Image 1: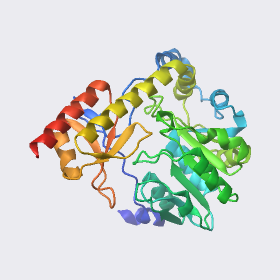
Image 2: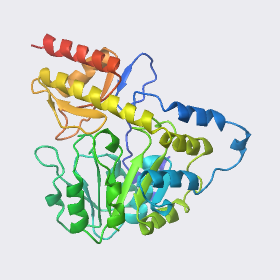
Image 3: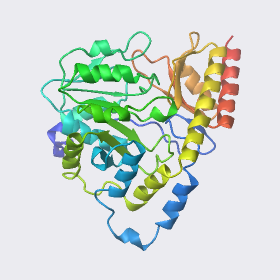
Length: 355
């Protein structure tokens, strides 16, 4: 019955999210979710506001949340945009700021939603290859373009681009928007948010899904100078004036009010990551330097797809990407210490059995 579709639907290749299995008792290390619960203050805020006020629309401008985020990043509220997860913020960004005559630039190995948005919004794009170390090399971006977007740390590689390199891009391309997608920045990098006052072409996008354990609430935000934020607001208010519900707003605000919990959770994940890297390297894996809550690793003597299947047989799920250049890598989310130990034990068994 596809004759009823709009023409563009026939051309779309939708994004495929990580598997969300329905079976229980799995060690789920495939979607980069935080292994620790949200702050108790978040859960308290949700309980407190689960009442008759849910019959009312939420604040369409999310003014209180914007101010909290602005204060956290030493910015003004008119330099903050919020949306229903960073994916919605990204979607509005592609429409509002990246649909230009010249092509959009982004890495050839990166967040796979970028080409999906290009298809949806009919944006021409050029995918710039990572270097031999699977890193973004800013010298490769010295070409005419209508915008630049990349995750930092990159996904699925986990490699971090330093702020100095980001500033180089901003100075090289003063007339186009450079979007830095910082979903994983709290696990080992310095946010480009501090550069926002100095660069009118910089937009920084973050999410509360990863480091603040709110993947189930869908809250994302963008930071940029007011003229960029206005463009996002115009698109948002032409699409959905109420992207964040009341509970999500209160949960998000509460997450910023418990800095100690946030920092402790991030540090636990970083420590577990480093332990996992050490163990993988002991087993002979090559592990890319990671500043995220996951690692990207391959073994010279074993097929990645085979390892993923053997892990699944032991009720451990990791992410395998069957695509050129990275089809021998596994992306492994950092779990709890107990989950990490179980993973290490099973990997040791797999590698030992194959020797």
